Image (cartoon, rainbow, N blue to C red; front, top):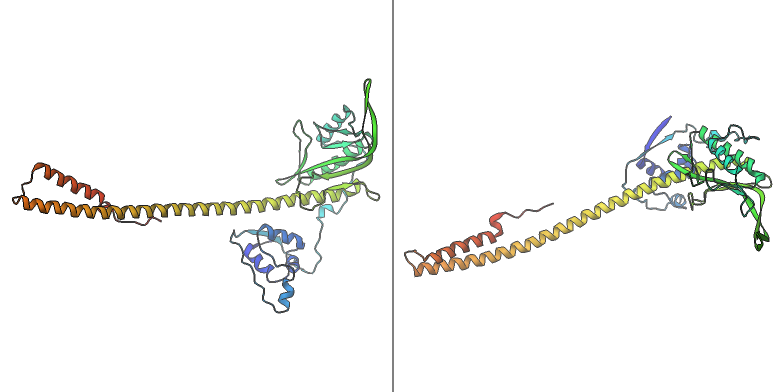
Length: 361
């Protein structure tokens, strides 16, 4: 049964009881629940928190950052004490590697055709550089490596993943799970055998010599989920061959895909937060600019008003003296024109004649 819980509800629960108990409630491993909390930016109790609570100490609880009210699905476990299944049911049966290459995957078939026309490199192995998968093996391990990758490709496609074909001049091989691409490779390890003589016609010189070890290694690209601490390489050992570790390799591919997915969620949250901060800063900048503009306008209006009052007083004094000089109020044309012009200038200068002050939000 699928239920939903809000981010705030989960925040309350992880601060009300230990993570192990909350994880059991949702039938999740503790580390998976921690991933969910990290993705939703839910602060978690530090080590020793519940011990302090047990001894009666008051421990401050950080506030929940106001980001969004996201819901995430969980499958409710009716028996909280039941042991959590750590592995997906898809991995209960061992992924079998066939002894012969039958009906190979199109990309494997293409790689096999490419290997036929290739010579060995300085490591005495064949390394596909185009038109194939990311592979470097000796002739002795060529068939084995192709059978392993063929089985891996078929299993992933059967379980809903996509095998991405490399570009024409590339061998980068990706398995796509949902929207996440995981780069994989298969290689044979080599060992240094000392300096060897290499001839070029009549000329020869010594170079570092290598030879294949017969030890195969299947792995995930070194820069995929760098710093995650997830296991990337699975090699032939004394007790286990690569074929015996395919299930572990597949789990690692899924773990890398989940890690990338969670990192994408975190990055999106960070980008949203940064965009929110940017908008807030932009809004603050606009408010400050508007405040400065209003302040400058206020000073200008005050100065203009003060100046208009002075000019008004001056014009009134001119008219007063003109009335004394011309009792009949018949002024010379030039004086009349000047008085009218001056009054118009004062009217235009006085800011209160055009508008009353208004506060812009």
